[in-house]
Length: 144
Image (tube, rainbow, N blue to C red):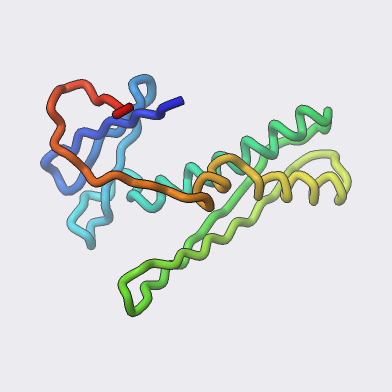
């Protein structure tokens, strides 16, 4: 299944209207980077996707097991280092709190399941990102 995200970058700062055709969010850069700070910056959007996936994976597994849980709170942070060759190494740290009447064993199982969420597996696997090309038509298309 192909995911298509369209972005319209407007002339103020780096504000971008981001849509999947059904839902819309705003992305931007901080003021210190020349943005207007009206939305999440690109790295925050990536981390938000990872955090959302982890929380959804916990909830999904708990439902399948019939375990009653309440809110899931997650904090995710990233430290990036650039090596002498200009390559980046990212270290992502996640802390999760699960409210609910579950045992410590169940809580541990759920937190471990979060580490196997789809987005984490996707980010840890191989990426082949094609270089940008000029958009020929208004509608975005995925090459075969």
